[in-house]
Length: 576
Image (cartoon, rainbow, N blue to C red; front, side, top):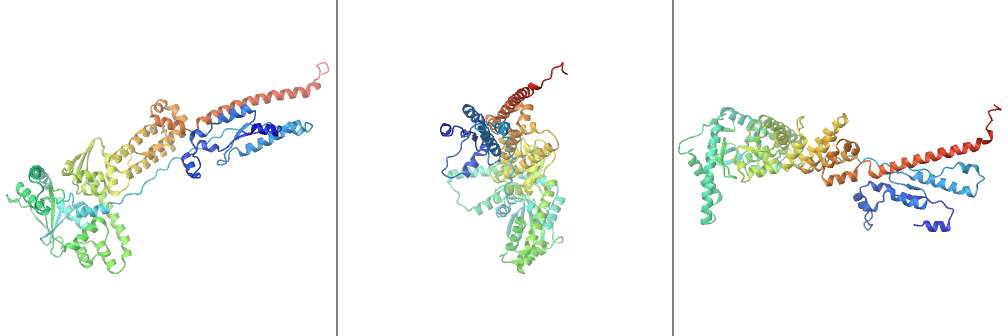
């Protein structure tokens, strides 16, 4: 310090000790260090001195102590005002005859600086994942869990999925709905046959695996192997040998593009599993190429402007009463493809509404989730394209991929319904009975970070609304904290930490045991970020104590001055 030099060369100059950059006590040091020069030494938490250290040094030197912050505009006026007071007081020894110097006060006390409350963290929602457009196109090319088989010109076979077709086209919706009404009990027999076929298929696969181990890799191509396995399975089930020919529904009178429809057991070309499939025989006028393009549009809602056979596509769209696709083709042919954007938007809106309807009613469902308090019907193709976790379960070698019922333990119906709504529409539909933490746990379990963020936002909104209405939320926030940290809801955990720290005194007075039961990391965070901070409380106590002492000194000094002033004017009682 320069204090000895000042006293040596300027003995009558008053000295004031000033602590600068007060705002560093509560600032984000990482952000501060990033904003500094690249070669500057980073500021550490231990480099910042508490207020009592400055007061100790000032007390040893016998000089006043003040703290300032240019960032917060605090203490600057106090320093200059009290420096002027100290300078005027030092002149009393040289200019003692000037009466106005006698009225100058000595440097005043500085009230401690209360740092502002940190703003609550903003819940950031990551970019919404796509609606599974590319996944849907891939699912059409690799028809996993397919339940529809189109036969074109008696030779072309195309597998598809009822839920994608029915939600994208009113014609297909009516077609498959008519099938459900015509044969409501067929699914029971199909399920029994499916179970038998699954057992038989497991035997075949086990025998094949043993043969592969003995003879090495198979010599037959994959297509021939699929045909032979398909034929053996069908013959084993007795569908051909016993002459159990399924009843065909004639559709020629219903629509020009269809000939007939029936249900039968088929082997899926991807999973090699046997399952019930709706076989739809198309009219001979339906060409395979344009029909595949039509299916791709129904799956993705997109139409390639460079499509070659636009005329054939327009004819099929006209026959199948898909007027939006017919209009889009016409716009492309008229060099007005920009007009297709509005048609595409309307297509996706109608599709989303139809998907919600199918989810709520269980229409065209092919899987049922057995939960702790009930069951919910869903659709495997939509789940595969919307969730990697579901895609692994239904598209892999797990036993759930072949079952129509899947048991999910420790999950309630309300939370699962919210997850399915999200997977189908990419939107969160909050329910009054929905527990945000249960939804967060389920979303984290299904590896859905976007849904976790939406649930975090919903939880914060509900807590904020309750706090604004006067309801105490301290206990609920404490219960949310470590559960949110456990389920990777980091934004909700940060909000809970902020609420506890900014209301630390009231929370600690009501829930002292709960605060002490938190983890060591959380307690360390509370102590570091609590508001008001500990150093402020100590400074406030010191300020109030010194202020009372000065007030007592001023009262005693005023009494002494009043006695000296009136000592010669006291009148005796006799004269009075």
